[in-house]
Amino acid sequence: LAAPLAAQSLQIYSEFQRIDPYGRIVPVDRSEHPREILSPELARNAHAAFHVAVTLPGNTSYFLYAGSNPGNIIETRLYKEDFTRAGGQWFPDALTPLRPPYFGVIPDAAAGIPGQTTRCYLLDIWVPGDTPVQRVRVEVLMKIGIWYVAPMEVRIVEARVPPHSEQFAITHLPDIDERVDLPAMDCLASYLLGGA
Image (cartoon, rainbow, N blue to C red; front, top):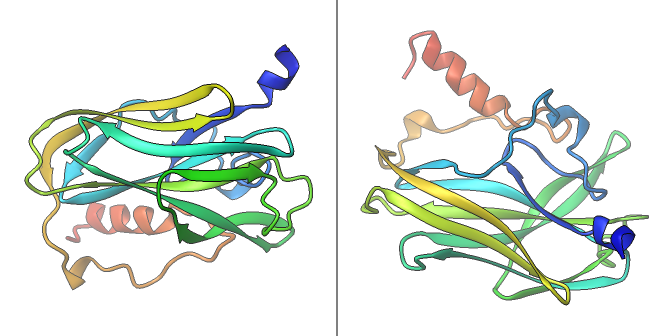
């Protein structure tokens, strides 16, 4: 019994760590000490994104759902990540919006990825600008006969993102095989050098 159970997992990762169709962080996004996502701080009037990886043995179907408690404070949405092959590696790239509840199977027959063990999703959390400072439980739930839960205690903080401004628009996104955190690092570097 222990061997099949070890192959089943539901994991939440940072938006800066893309997961391949075999359940590994893509090499370019790996860090020496990856962070476990347990209790992220989220600003108001902002989106936060997380990667969700479902790893199961072949020919396993499952049910997937994301929600929050209390349920009327923030909005959660799931997107299926479709893979693209570049430089001999698979990268999650395009997003397909999902309607809850979502049913899936490993491997994804439409993807055509040999030996696929993992399907990936993007969890988008929207925090409205008038949300009170508080804690909200966010869960991604997977059912394959029994329930698996990946919980987070989201901490809504005082910070509020100003309305969209072209001044802060990103004009260049990294190529698919470059580090996914490059735009964030460029923004931070600009700020540290005296920029907005």
